[in-house]
Length: 152
Length: 295
Image 1 (spheres, each protein chain N blue to C red):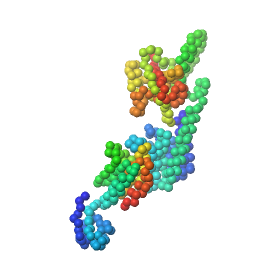
Image 2: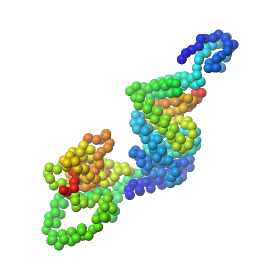
Image 3: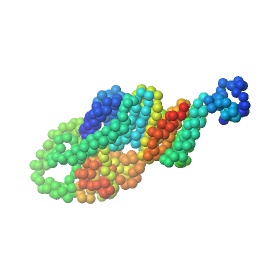
Image 4: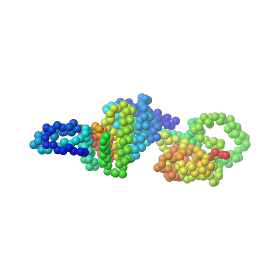
């Protein structure tokens, strides 16, 4: 991701596509340097989701995750040999859920849980990001769902 | 007939589930081949086929995670819950307020119980001692020793009896057998092979059970069927005679095994009812030979 040069003053006119958080607007004495990162809408959320997923993956029972949006896709799974199968399953599950939702006129999908004999898969749509989390059956998927949905 | 009974019982079960869980909008069952088994009585307008089509691809892909056990889709205006029950998939469409845990518990207890009850009823149904009123799924042949005795007795019978039998046979309308293809008493044009060089195979029994299992059809390796077919100059094998080592034998239809996991393992898949008639269990050996039309 290309980074803009750090600027010391806020008075300068900001281009439209530069984002700024409330943290950045604190007085200069409490935050000596303000860094502007050139991002597109939704990109911050993607980074946050990725960070949360990376942390989750260290927990016991989490097999891995797939994070996908229109610009990029990240796959991080404990079983590299099954990456393709899991990616296909994730995609197929998403398509099936969409078809089911359309068939029964259920509107926008919030989440989908698919339980297999060994592994379960949680599908979430957070903004423009499609998240698939693979985990063992013993893992509390509701907690994972809650954590990920709280990311805004 | 058997399938109809299962279907009716399951339809009533689904309707009862819907009565106790008022959040259920529609529910139905389909099997692994995508056949709709039953739907609750008030869900006649539900697009069953569309749902099954949507699921087909996922069911295949879900092999990666050991096969689909359940699927829960939470959407803005409702939920869809699909769960695996007794080699079938139960689809329940509910509104947003449905308690899926409760629903899951109810359905996973009720449906297997109903199926088990029906299985028990079908398995333990008394076999009529005389000719059955309804069409038997397959024709049971007498034991070999019994057959020889019968043959001897028949040989000593006077000609009048033979003539009477012939006359009775002639009087039987041919259309009746055409109209009733399920009737599998051995037709006069077919007979067990007498040639010692005719093919036969000793195969291991695998009991076939389930809702959609045809009671009159066994399954064996396609390779064996092909070999037999080659032996008879490419003629297709429709029927086989299965003989157990205690002398029981039956005649039934035959189809190739489609399950690649058990293909080529020298297995004959026999419906449970037929296993009972043959007095064989899973893992035991039986002799299987093709029945061909007489030239």
